[in-house]
Image 1: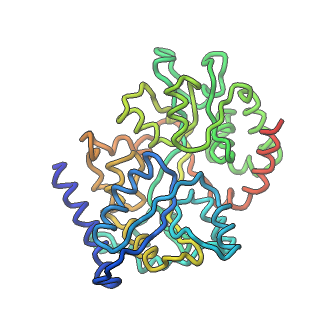
Image 2: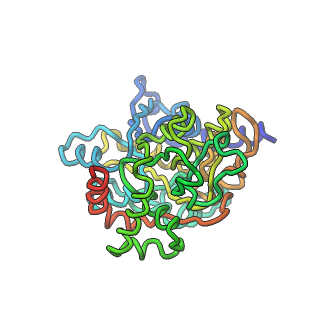
Image 3: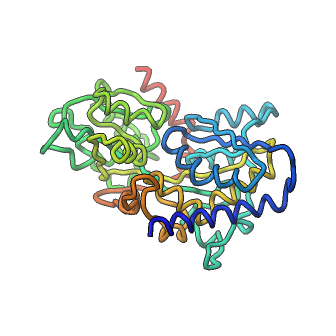
Length: 368
């Protein structure tokens, strides 16, 4: 079954990629290039295996994989200067929405994206808000709390409140430094706010003050992280005993490296990661073809065989099988399959509208 599944996904991927090869650059002696920007580490590896390699195999295109730490500043600088060198960028959806609002992205025709194998249109096949004129989603991921199981033994944390409880769960905490998205939401849930009330609360001065006050309770014990690969390393090195992290990164540390980590699913913040094309991308036709290919049913399911992020197309979910190298079932590790306790889906519009103001307040809080 595992071999048949992998063979099916590979065949689907190559068929989609071959369409571009047949229509463009046929017989070209020189390979073109495509600059695809993502988050590095195990996540980029999953994209290389599921998207890049099959696309390159069927097309005269070489993909340059570039790492970054998120946000829209670098894209904005390229577009504003007229010196665009990136083609396709993997954004958190809230950042893609901000980039879209600022005119930094090429329009996408969702109706032209590949349909599901049963003929369902792409617009109907993607989960809610996953495809529009500025982005096409690839995965659903969660920001979660991970902890060192060896440290706590039988007294392991069970709820998001425990991340902020230094008395009963002593030790350093890891938090993302770049911006407070997901962190503020977790702080409010840990302070007793129901998931459905979080954004109404954050929209008030009282709610923001409450979130920052909760973070004040652990600030002196925080070790800050930036790239998504860092939280697992902080845990492995013993620099922290709990940290916020992306669920797929912790999964890889546990499954591939044998680390004694566990995931606390209560309080998870779910989010879409999306592909967008930069306005004025230097390799426009290849970028459009790659985006359509990478977000089709087969490649999205194939990515889930490398990392525990759920595909953003409904038709991909039944195709999620075993880990490509280790052979164990992957579905049970997806964030959408782990809904124990409280969970919240990021409000992309809220963050797009408030990101700059919140970042100023966050920077001031960090500086104090």
